[in-house]
Every structure is written in C-alpha cells, then in structure tokens.
Image: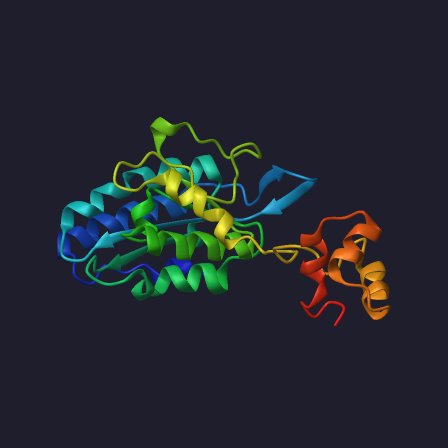
Length: 234
C-alpha cells in the first residue's frame, strides 16, 4: 500500500498546499535505500515509517516538516512510508485515523515508526500509553526524533518504548508503566500446598490435633493452621 496517497491538508490555504506539494515532490525525487539493517539477534530487514500531524487551520505548522528530509535520509524512509495527518487537538487520539491505519495495518513486526515528538501519538499520558504499548505488543519500534537528543538508528538505541526530550510529558512515568502491561507468567501469592502437605493430611486423618501435628512434624502451628481447613487437604 502507498501511504503517500493518504497525505491531505484540506484546511490549509492554497499557498500552503502548493508549498507542501513542492516539498514532498522533492522528497520523492530523492534516492533512499530500501532496507534499514538493525542487528539484534541477527541481520534483519526492517522498514521505517515517518508519522507526524498538522493542526487544522494553522498554516505555520506546515513549516515544522522541514525536518522530514533529514529524518528520511537518516532512517532510510521511503517516500511512500511518509504519513502526515491533519488533526483536531480537541479530539481524542482515537480520531487520528491515519495513525491507527498505519500501526494496525501497514506496519509489521520489528518495523520502526519515527515521529518528531510525542504529541504526534497523543496529548495526554493515557493516549501515549495506549499507542505505546500497542506498538510494544506488536513489536514495533518507536523513535521520538529530536536533533539535540542524538538518537541514532542503531540497535543500541532501537528500544520498545519512547525516548525523547519532552517538557510536557513525564517520560519517567511512561517508562514505569511498562511493568503494568507485562504478562504475569505465574500466579501471585504462596504456592498451593507445601512440603508438609501430605504429612499434615495423614496426621489430620489419624485424628491428631493441630498442636499435636505441629509438634510431631516440628513445624509452627501457623503452618498447620494455614493448610488445615483451606481446601488444600480438605
């Protein structure tokens, strides 16, 4: 699919449309390498995509895209992998249709999404978490690109959570929430039964009291009580 066809600025005035058209045309005429190699556990071919947004009705936001050519060269992004979406900041990130289509349908496992700043993925921490951890589950890498941050397209910096210089978003809070989305592989709490389970069961069936059972096994009374009537041994 060619994502370049999705680019639209319906509310930008005529001069703004003409400027953007010429600029994107120049990008499409540039030569880019198709593959981006990141050696993680081996050499893999990966695709890189660029996504940014433009606030409807504000022509000055078009000038933000002067970084696009630099980013495309650095990350080897093909022209058809560039998506610029017009958004309304008053609406939820779920209304960013092109962003949803990009990460849900266009991007595959271990592809890379490059954004100029975190606001492209949402205006609140909750919005950012939703997009971020969807990409985490789908194994999509995200770069929040900022020239001063010196983030390079290499294996060392290609991480599954956002790295960016942001004043309005608590990035440490975003990182800490990663653990909340981690799959719990084992149940919390004590394991069912114990080393004394069968011994307690035998003594109980032999009509020993809890105190006698604890004394005979050399364990605490609380251990016996914990397994006496909790359903483990009946």
